[in-house]
Amino acid sequence: MARSRLTPERESELYAAVLDLLREVGYDALTMDAVAARTHSSKATLYRQWGSKPELVARALRHNKPVTLAEIDTGSLRGDFRALMELTDDCQMEKDTALMRGLAHAVHDNPDLHQALRELLVEPEIKGLDEVLRRAVRRGEIDPDNPALGLVPHMLIGAFVARPLIDERPVDHAFLSSYVDAVVLPSLGV
Image (cartoon, rainbow, N blue to C red; front, side, top):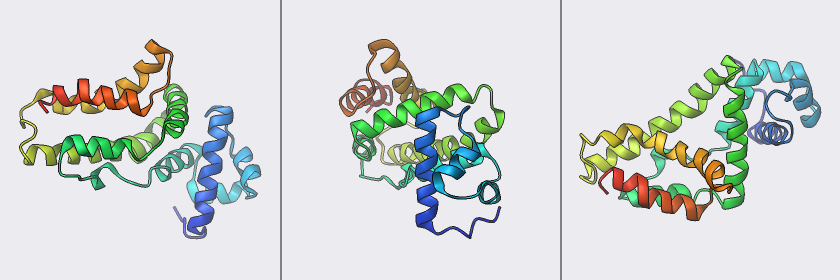
């Protein structure tokens, strides 16, 4: 897909507008017409650059995560999780969680969105987390045969789903830090 016509600044503006619209109206009500109007661009430009709404949404979400998990390396798994949590503040975490919760619902009815999110967001994040965990294994922090290694993504996603459902409160740094210390790290033997 030809994507060279936009400057990085313009691309960032477009992605920010897409995320704002997603938060305002949700995935199903988001239209390329609305994105074009919000960004003062043509619908033809949007389709030429991204091909489809699912691709645009997934790339906007990916762009919103400037640091990959694999880049975080503090020398300890506990430090890596702390550094990961410091990448965002409570307000942004609440906004992102609400956004992802809405998209999680939308993927059930939109296989193209599901595929785009898997390829551009989920798989790279899981690969990055796997690298963080492999480094911890190489440092001797985690037993390579620990069965919880393959369940870390599930544990982390579970925290973001369960907190609002059970406690009727958003995930914040205090909760996430407590969860990592009480659930994730002990399950890994750390």
